[in-house]
Length: 98
Image (cartoon, rainbow, N blue to C red):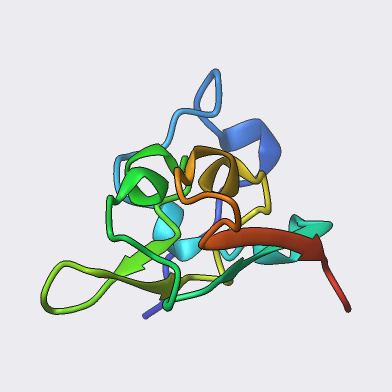
């Protein structure tokens, strides 16, 4: 049995949704730039994970950064900006190819 989707008029005022629903919405196709993760350069400081507004930085079973969830990443570039690795970042931004 599928859940009935609300119409625009039925949405609560301010479009307030219950917690934990963002996982249901794949927003990765919004981006124009894509973060590219280089595991070889990563020092596992987790700044990218901490600052990502979409929780798109993936951690492996050992809690080490392992990649990017492109289904939810909007390409804001915060992960790359926050990466302290110099001179080359462990996360760089490239134009999205569709």
